[in-house]
Structure formats: structure tokens, C-alpha cells
Amino acid sequence: SYVLTQPPSVSVAPGKTARITCGGNNIGSKSVHWYQQKPGQAPVLVIYYDRDRPSGIPERFSGSNSGNTATLTISRFEAGDEADYYCQVWDSSSDHVVFGGGTKLTVL
Amino acid sequence: EVQLVESGGGLVQPGGSLRLSCAASGFTFSSYWMHWVRQAPGKGLMWVSRINSDGSSTRYADSVKGRFTISRDNAKNTLYLQMNSLRAEDTAVYYCARDRIAAAGFDPWGQGTLVTVSS
Image (cartoon, rainbow over all chains, first blue to last red; front, side):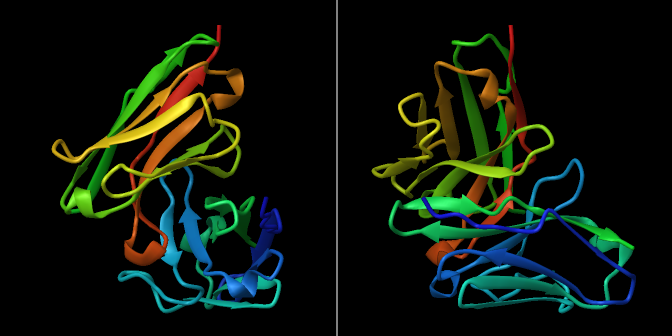
């Protein structure tokens, strides 16, 4: 089965740029979606199709995907961006949805 | 407003059964694929199952296949998850989520319902 690998934690100072990676075999050939989950809340879609933002998501959130790594980038990091972030793909070979293990993003 | 509201969670003994419901409103439910995703306490997200728009096609994670059944009633705008032969490792918050058109991610998600499997 397809596996997505994320770093367990990332820390960033306010105003700086946070980057969260999502590794998978030839993930660049798949569409990657990203979710933000704050404590006690349901996940929220922040990036779809590698780099598109749903309405209401700040432009500070962006994404890229190439080769074996997809990346979620949050520029001008704010304390309110602290959350768990998950990447997700659809594995066509199994017709299953796959989530990464999640990354806890915290302020330095 | 697009909304999903889960219900039916609770405490159940190992080997028992439970049926979760997810009431949808604010959109044409019958046009969308739907999913169940769960999250064990302190753990990450795990996809459980999905169903297509008319209910004719379903898929399951290997860990629940043969024990869980996803279904929907488009006349009632409701998604279901029948869970049988429950195990301690099924303990989790269960979310329903709408699959955006053309598989563009899950949005929105319900608030979740907690299932606890314990004697």
C-alpha cells in the first residue's frame, strides 16, 4: 500500500516561513491535498490539487509537488497557524485514500 | 450553509455493533461521494471508507473490511456507517466528509462522533 511520510514536528518563528514536507514514491504524479487541524476541531482543507487554495484560505498558504516530495508552505507564520497538518492522496492502485502521519507545527 | 452532523457514537463492548449517521444539509447530497475518516485518541487521521454518489460503489480500509458497511439514503440526505465486531483499536472520533467534485479533497468535515470500544 502507498505510504506518505511527514516529519512529526516543525517549529517556526513568527513572521518566518514554515515548510512541511510529505514524501511518497513518485508523489509528483499524484494530486496532493493538505488539511489543517486545530485541537478539538475537525480538519479543514487548506490546499487541494497540490497548490490550489479553497475560498477563505489566506494567500500565505501555498503548495508544491514534484518528484518524491510535496510541500506545504506557510509564509509570514502567525501563532494562529499552530496546528496539525496532514497531506492526503488517492492511491489509484488500491482505490484507497491515504493520509500522511501528520505534522505538528508550533511556534518557536 | 453546507453542513455535516454526525451522531450515533458511544460506548460499546468488544464484539458489539454500532451505527453512525451523518446528516447533510446545504448542498445536493446525491451529487457527492462521501467518506468516513477516523482519528484514534492522540493519533493521526485514518481513512475508513467511501461511497459513490448513488451508493453503487464502496471501498474500505483493510483494517475494517468485512466488519464495517458504508451506505447512504439520498432521500434522507444521510450517510451511514454500520460497524460490527468492534475491537478496542476501533476506538476513535469518526468524521464524515464530503468529497469535492473531481476528487479535489474533502470539504467540509463534520464535527465528529466518538466511538469507545471497551468492556
